[in-house]
Amino acid sequence: MSSTTRVVVEVFKYNSIILLHRILSYASLRSLINNIINNLLHRVNVSPLRALSVSPGLLEQYNVRYTEKWIKRIDENFLEYNVGIRPRLNVPLITQLPRNLRYLSDKFFSGDVSGTIAESLFICLLDELGVNISLVGHLRSLKRRNMFLPDFIIWDNSPAIRLLISSDDYQPPAYAEVKGSTGNIDPIRLIKALLQLNKLLTKQGSCGIVFFAFKNPRNFNYEALVLEVVT
Image: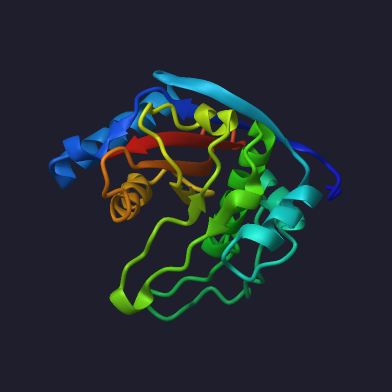
């Protein structure tokens, strides 16, 4: 598949704003996320936000300028991950392995690559919506404090950002946490995203975004979900 091939990624927005101060326990957070995932799969309480016609070459430019990991050629990786075909490894004809051992027959997709693809897709979405991406920066984790923060800070206050943040109290900056997956929609990853946002959304009216790129388990196409989060 050529790196000039375009891939359409459907992006949906969850229709309800997540109010972090109303989530009183981990159990209630888990219940909320499970409900969101169920709604997403059945297209309930979600609205189409944008059908991104993704150019892999442009996606690589976003990757170079905005993502955390030192991973190149996202244009090629994205196309291979989108198709979902994993190369097979050599398996010797000798079948009598020591007890409890099995051969690895297929390569695994890299979590770092899928995360980098998701971050690149998020910047692509912002650019497509008209958000000024020169006002977007990637945050560095406070590792000395063992504190993993949201991925991005967004200083834009144009009408375009209102497509993602509808709160009347919004004042820049907004924070965004990005997650990516090529497998099942793991609720734990979305829970972690909300917990990471919660570390910085400490003031009244603080706003955040969760962007989750995943492979639809029904058609195996890349899709994405946006959650709007306020304190």
